[in-house]
Length: 301
Image (tube, rainbow, N blue to C red; front, top):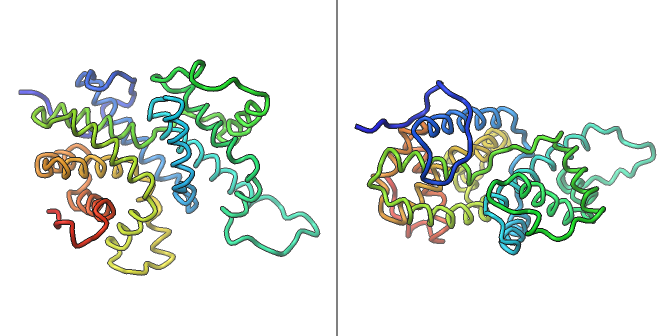
């Protein structure tokens, strides 16, 4: 009988291999590494996280990635690099002393203030994040895919690198989805992985672009309030940054579309220790926005 995978604190390092070719031991490493890094990321999350994943910005990054024929992983990695850079920039902006004689007119938010300060450089910063992500990707060929590097772009890259303290090896949602699919395929060989994998890419893109609306729906479901309080919103921030929850949610929605819900969701809960209710709530919040009308979505169980 084949071994079934779930989180076990035995190993912690992971290496990249092609989808569908990982051994049992390597998948175990992947899972433990994902779990640890996800928890570390949640512990370091701040109230500014998530707010910077603007729909237009994400769409812009994904379009650049597609136009340059880069691996989709590059786009999602670039989004994560951009958010981390912007969060650090905001934190530095807040702690910086106010210059004498500065105007008393305050922007609506710190995010607005930073965007106003960086608005002329912002497109270049975005492209720099794509460039840096492409260099780290095992699946893209940055030297032939990207335009000739200019001095201005190098300056922008250096600014991003310094802002991130040269820590570029961050995981992105697509990595979670792909590794969880690997494990799911190992534990449940009867699941049609090829169509599920295909649907997951479309579902993840949809969630990335509509994340504000989807997480707002999930917040209202979780709090059972139409207008959650400010405190509830701040407490909810780690949920919006939980890549493991996002990963299982993406796969669950794809499984629902393929009518493989019962077969997949129970196994995902077993693999990740995330409750079926949490997976169901996330999937329902997403499906509501895919369908467009909440009453058209059959309640999941």
